[in-house]
Image (cartoon, rainbow, N blue to C red; front, side, top):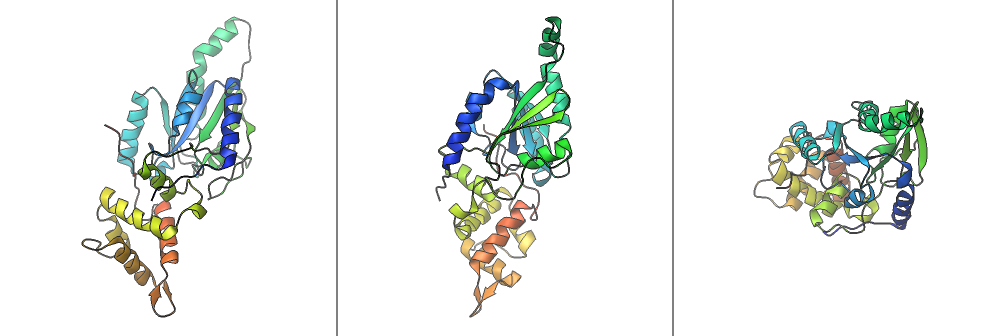
Length: 282
């Protein structure tokens, strides 16, 4: 199941980011804490070279806390400042100001000595679609400025947001990269809702999710849905889930599409448990 999604507006977004990068001091990259490797756009490292960098592990409340701690260390060791956040409740969001001020402290001091008393900190906030940028910004400033939604591709244009005095954010639309070389990356992005659901067959995707959950968190499917996957095909497992939930059509046949949709929705809401699908590279 080789999934690819790079709509035309993302090419426009990349060009816009390349033009605006000179306006900012810091690049803040939001990653999905459930897939901290698969949700990292490799193009951002090229775009943001010579800029201060902050990595935000958002949706940390949905991810495996032990693995999140390991990923925080991984990115810290690579030279990033790392913040774990829950953009819905606001946990960790206010830390962005403090970390940004720490990064800019020496530069601002040098500017003051040259007579530039007031130099606002400007940061560009970037990330893949549906990673929670708009929700985070709204929570950060305490009012609704950015449009939010539970589907990929809600934000389509850039906007400057004044967070506090002396600190401004440039919000950008969610952007992917032109080709996922690893099939598993495309799957994980689809599982977490970073891709437009309309481009993927939900039943096939749910079968892949069952397979990955059994590999990554053995027993999680059984615990959530009260069935035993061992020795059964993923198709059989999905059918049993549908029957247990009563998702039946005429003739007592399982409604596979409805079952698949519920399975994906429950995974995205961490109902089977807090999970992280990415492993730290060797």
